[in-house]
Amino acid sequence: MKTGKTFSLIQVFVFLFLASVLHSKAQPVTTIAAGGYHSLVIKSGGSLWTMGNNADGQLGDGTTNRAYLPEQIEPAGVTAISGGQYFTLFLESNGSLWGMGDNQIGELGDGSYNNVSAPERIEPNNVTAIAAGRLHSLFIKSDGSLWGMGYDVYGELGDGRFFTNAPYGTNRPIEIVSNGVTAIASGDGFSLFIKSDGSLWGMGFNNLGQLGDGTLINKDRPKQILPGNVAAISTGLAHTLILETDGSLWTMGWNDYGQLGTGNTNTLNSPVKIVPGGITAVAAGGDISAFLKTGGSLWMMGVNDFGELGDGTTNGASTPEEIIPSGVTSVVIGYHHVLFTKSDGSLWGMGDNQSGQLGDGTTNSPPRPEQIFGAYNRLAIQFLIGNGVQLSFVGIAGTSYALDRASALAPANWIPVTTNATSDTGSLLLSAAPIGGTNNFWRMRPVP
Image (cartoon, rainbow, N blue to C red; front, side, top):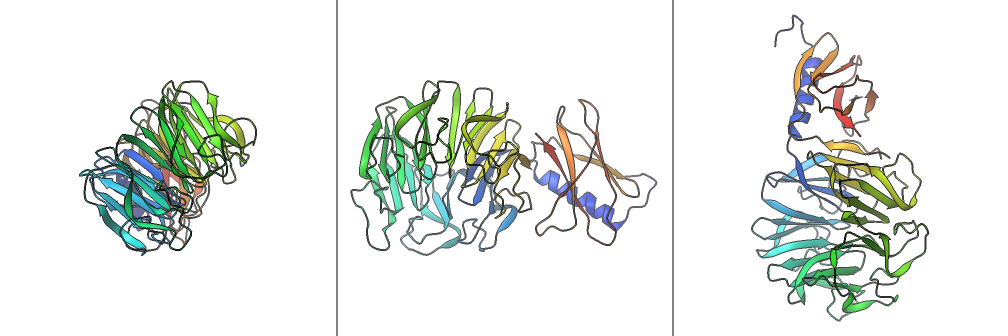
């Protein structure tokens, strides 16, 4: 690189740091999941990445230290992920089930009640789907059988028992349904599943109508809720979203924060239609709900104390609110944070970040979406020039960008720096002068 200029060590480090950050994020994100206060990501090729709270080893890195940036845990072969309150489940391509994190109620199903800080294999093969609840786990095998382990005080394992004495559940998988199960969801003390005929079934905690059977009575055996036409389900702490085959959205359960999208805060113990059609995916978590419409628009409702609705405020919403107009391909929700992917393979997040669960290197909680992983092979540093710092890279046409600067990375306190706009064919120029007498770190990020 010949520019006729002499580069300082700071400039060279800035170049190398930015280059490593941008190129390390070149793989597209294919699958996401959110635990209570941690997040899980699968990239193309099946590598597993984790970030956020790690007090019980749920990140699987062998420690109990929080991670403010995504850490690679498995290099390849991971096909599915699910996060509980303080534990993690994942599947590998051979159908093996793995887990790590909190296990005090036996939710990992390894026969012990010991927490695990590195991945351990629970089932060797034939597992096709997983769902981690607050303190219990569900999985489906290739023969359509449904299995569960962990907390069972409310009947959430559907085995006909309400555990009333410690350890309050089972630490080995037990079979709940022998065949025909196609989809599962786990909430706080309750479980739902779909059968091959499209019928919806539920068991467990029902004090707020989250099972949707018209009562407020807990169930220790699976009970049919709807006879057919159910395409997908998702559960929050005490509410449920249902996507029917005609694209309609139905909700039930706790509604103190408007998470059911009815325009009020009345609890419902039977499913109520919220949107008549055009829905392609649903996601519930904590006291929040989200759904995607045809075309990839993202809509949300519920609590917004940390900006988790992504509308730039901390005001809750009791009716669906459009957040992103197009291009969203998946969305997941933790207790108070939200992650979503876009069609270019990029990962975005908003809301609670006090444990680093957004993976942006900070503990700041953004009330608008911010990019965590960049788009696939769309950003590349071209050259570094000048006595200060001036960077040029190829951006995505029609996208706005921002440059942030920080003086430390443990965690970073990013300060926005103004940039110019890009065009279909032009380069985006970023400029900022180093701060004397301190470290200098820069990052580039697209903004929605």
